[in-house]
Image 1 (cartoon, rainbow, N blue to C red):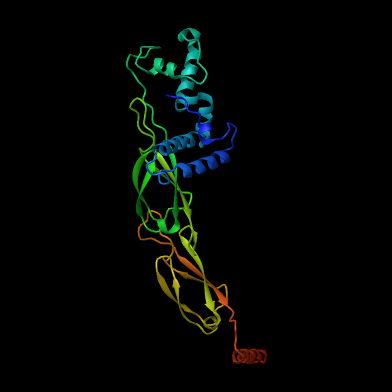
Image 2 (image 1 turned 90 degrees about the horizontal axis):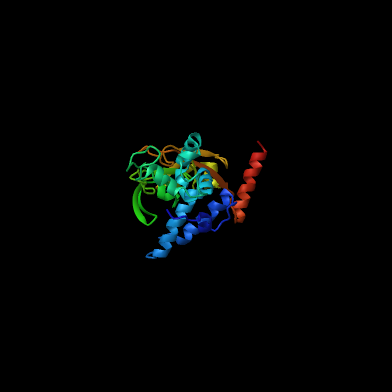
Length: 299
């Protein structure tokens, strides 16, 4: 396997922080994403390499192995085991007299490949699982109110997935078998998709519940009445009690956000009233309010 300097791919130094790596990955992923660069094979190649770099450097354990073992970082555990076994057997058990720095490919070939070496039978190969891939999918809140299908392009391949309703911001799901290819017939890795959900609605989401502030005119607040409010998926009528105060909260049961992977179950919608003081009063209206104030004062 050819050595790739993933630090150079992301344009960061070897002592870059996890935050710096994450920022660099997001910036480059947006720049070279296939949706932004249709039919651009070079951008597609760079996008694939950027994702590979993030898979390695964006994970603390993978990064540690990569820093020590370079292109053979995926086999770090096997290398360590083999190294300990060699030390226990003594220097005569391996003709090279040691391991080359950051290059264990020849050692692996002799230990696990198609040769007879160190007691392994000819043709025996160890199967290695492919690396996992990580991707970020940006959606709007309205996109995850109902389940829907979407096609993702990951490392140049189109993957059709169904996104369940109720996905949370920052939630990660696993798509089994859509990671990197295995080695020596080993299984493929998995694809992990993290959702970044932007809320551009007047509703605030907290878990499965939604919250919204609704203006209530002064006269309806004082006398009571009926108003129509907009819910996330339609409209609803509410009865307003007389003498309703600003800040009063009412609950609309089952009008919140869908519960993740529980079809037909929803959270609640909480409406908070903000009573609006009337402006632009006529002389007659002011006189009536003064009369009301006087009546209140004489009680």
